[in-house]
Amino acid sequence: MALYAAPRTIIGAWSWGPSRTWDFGRDYGVVDLEAFVMRLAREDVFIDTAAGYGRGHSNDLIRIAIERYSAPWRVISKVQPWHATSGRLLQGAVNRVLANTACGTVDELVLHNPAPRRLLTGIASNFRRLKEEGVVQSVGLSNFSASLLPEALAIFTEAGLAVRSLHRSASLVAQAVFVDGTAEFCRNNSIELVTHGVLGQGLLSGRVEELPAAARKRRHISDELVFQTRYLRRLLEDLGVAHRCSAGAVSLAWARAKGCTPIYGVHSWEQLSGSPLWNPLTLRSEELVALDIATAPWRESKK
Image 1: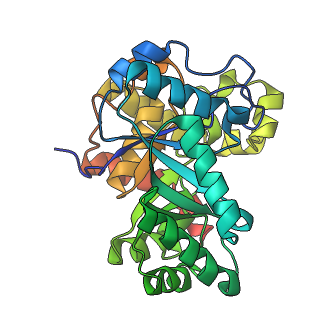
Image 2 (image 1 turned 90 degrees about the horizontal axis):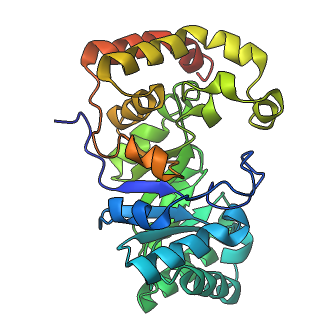
């Protein structure tokens, strides 16, 4: 029995296709799409995408998966405030997602980044219209801080919209959401806390030493941070050995135990074969305590 049963499985498509954003090369992407889809042929699978992911190639792969291999996937897509303030631009952005992914409907449309109150009211109204038309099933927010969340929630509620989720970065070394009131607010208001960056851009994957210096720099992983996290990374590796899994799987299990729905950055059949998606790890209470002790400096620095 898992400590926290995530309501859905979310796969991040940011690494599907040619992109230098996260130091992924031109050939970085889903290697065997058919095998990938067959293993992920589940209705609880959501693909988190955006127009710019993989320079648009991620959406191409989603379309092929749905049209050619009948993937029963549902799509989460993000829009920036400058698109969402205009009903015409927002409709165009959503239409492009529908056309490029062949998903039929956007299961969740996420406002990616905060906007001033004077704009949020109009944005909420535009979101509501799309929901009433049936092209969008639910709405979410992304990168809203604890101080901005109450006002945003009130505006969307007034527009007749329930905010399904909040997307924020969180990891063992980036725990702001757990100390600034964000996680508590989400829990009290039945908002799903969806977390990305759980592996710290590779820092907590167990393979950070394999990254070239240039790649570490692009991911903001300094030599000092690698040194500061040496004990934590060793603990993750030891827990991985004990549970016969990777250090990254332990990090993802920690996120689920904290009440989050982590986004899995799975990009290849090889990764998927050994993924904790199939055998979700349950960390014991003493293991969670050990991780809490090891990460105390990163919680204290956010208070």
